[in-house]
Image 1: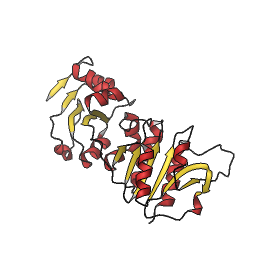
Image 2: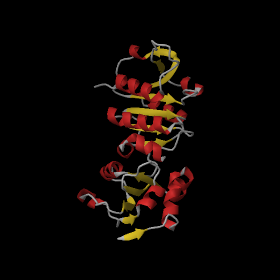
Image 3: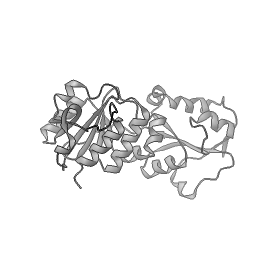
Image 4: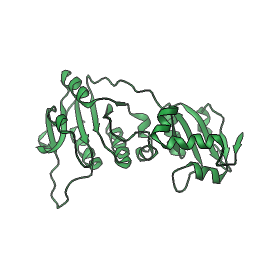
Length: 251
């Protein structure tokens, strides 16, 4: 097994660049930490390029499906390489999936307009996976879904749900051509409880501070809001998204 003992090793330097969006886009790779995410990536058939093991750790038998030879690193190197405060002993470098074209003809979709917080985006992806959403479409200006913090917040759901970057105006138009109703989120809309669950739908959620872009709200079939009964100014976008997805989902 190859062993790396220095944080200045060329491979370590290259892997650390994957913590940046530029590094990921340039290399076509992304970085994951911990056994749970590795297992979820395996289940999602994500191609592995490197499997990194901290000295003293034993590979689980079920990881035999990883077709790359593991590289052993010292505890010091693993800590240097990982972003988490307490690395879990395993990490991996994987290939970024190609941008797919999600068919917007029928199904239950989530459109994301410029959400910036990695924790929010990760929670939203995890919730969408739990709800059974058909696919997620991201607008330009949304935090990179392969940001390490986003991946950790998804708990691996990112590897099990189709995602696509696309102009949301175009995506809304395509859905409406296929008679898929599009619901925006806005305080100037209707209370969400007035809408019945749907076989097919699109839910559009927006930026933490600015909400959904106004021109998009003008193109939706209906805009929804969640009533606030306390003195809070608003709900967190990931919480609001979860409430609306579960309401709209026809069981």
